[in-house]
Structures are given as structure tokens and as C-alpha cells.
Amino acid sequence: AQTVTQSQPEMSVQEAETVTLSCTYDTSESNYYLFWYKQPPSRQMILVIRQEAYKQQNATENRFSVNFQKAAKSFSLKISDSQLGDTAMYFCAFMRGGSEKLVFGKGTKLTVNP
Amino acid sequence: GAVVSQHPSWVICKSGTSVKIECRSLDFQATTMFWYRQFPKQSLMLMATSNEGSKATYEQGVEKDKFLINHASLTLSTLTVTSAHPEDSSFYICSARPDPGRNEQYFGPGTRLTVT
Image 1: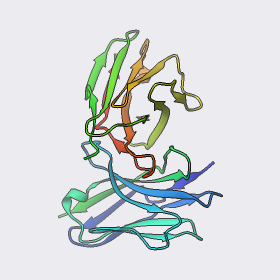
Image 2: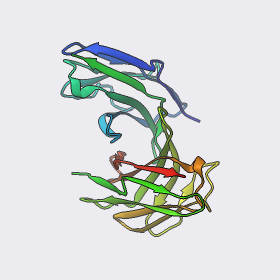
Image 3: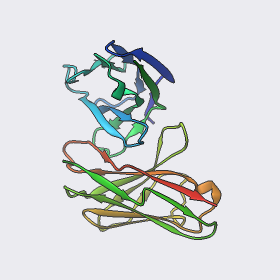
Image 4: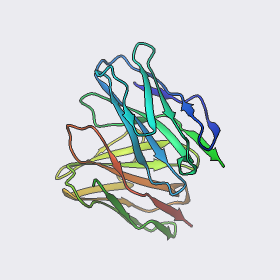
């Protein structure tokens, strides 16, 4: 079974600075997808970024980018120019190719301080 | 685009009663919807996968007779918690998959269930 590990239960960053959230996963599959979801205090889950395992290029969405290290099974999220609205729980998630199920990590609570 | 709604956003019910939660995809069709449960300060736990026109597939340890799921149309799935007990109090979240090729799920805002 696949597992997703987020080793940082909580992190904080100053507004406008950069922060990196860690995620590692364990799988024997070669075809899979990785996601970062954000859950702000409203509890609405929001897709931040996705990465296909077959793509070597790291995904980027505006201020959000990932560092995908397939051999190390690592998928970290970098948030640049942090904003107060980035304060949220961040969940790393894994989906095996051909499956519909998401496997979530336990989450990292990020607080952006003014 | 890809908006998912849930109703109600919160509900309080008495022990022993049943409560229904609706999940709708507003601007797309979803052949597959998912139901999750989230305990305070914890991650999401997949309860079941709901496919339009067929029976739901439940995860191990989830009581299918207690958590009834009906996916009657391409835009609506319902979760009914039957004979609710205080331990069923939780945050229930649905998600929908708009395009099987994209492997993305879009989430509803969740429903807070409190059983007294």
C-alpha cells in the first residue's frame, strides 16, 4: 500500500518570505500522480498543484512550485512571496495511475505571520 | 469551473435519527464522486467511492449499512448516516472527478455533523 509522509506538523513563515513543505511517499508503482491540496480555515480543500510522475519537469503554478525527486520519492512544495492568505493546512496526496483514490499525508499547518 | 457544493454545511441531529448529506457538481458531470471523513486536526479518510448508476465501493472498515451512498445522477451523490450516534460526529467532505483523464478531484466545502 502506498503511504504519504509529511514530517512537519507545523511551520511558520514571515510574509513575503519563502517556505518549503516536505513530503515523501512510498510506492512500487512507476505510474502515479502527486498533488498538494490546501485547506484554509474555511475547510474548503483547494488543489494547489499537481505533478505527473512521468514528467521530469517540476510543476509550477504562480508562486507555488514543487521539487519532485522521483528516485528519492520526495515531493516538496515551495511557496514564494508568502501571503497571509496562504495560512492553511497543506496536504500532500498520491494517486496511483489507473486508480481514482487519493492517499493523503497527515498535513502541515502553515502560518504566515505579518 | 469545477465547483462542488454540499448541503447542508452543518447539521445537528439526535442520536438514533438519520441524516442525509448532498454533494453536487455544479458545472460539470461527475461519473465518480468520493466521500471522506475528517476528524479534528487530522487528515482526510476515504470512506467510499460513488459511481453513477452503480453501487458504491466502501473502504475497509466502513459500514456500508450505516453510511448509505446513492449516486443517482451525474451531478448528485448523497450520503445518508443512518441511526446516527455521537461517534459519527465529524466533518464529511465529498469530491468529484470531472475528467477521468485528468486524475484530479475537486472538493466540496464539507458538512459538519454533530450527533447529540
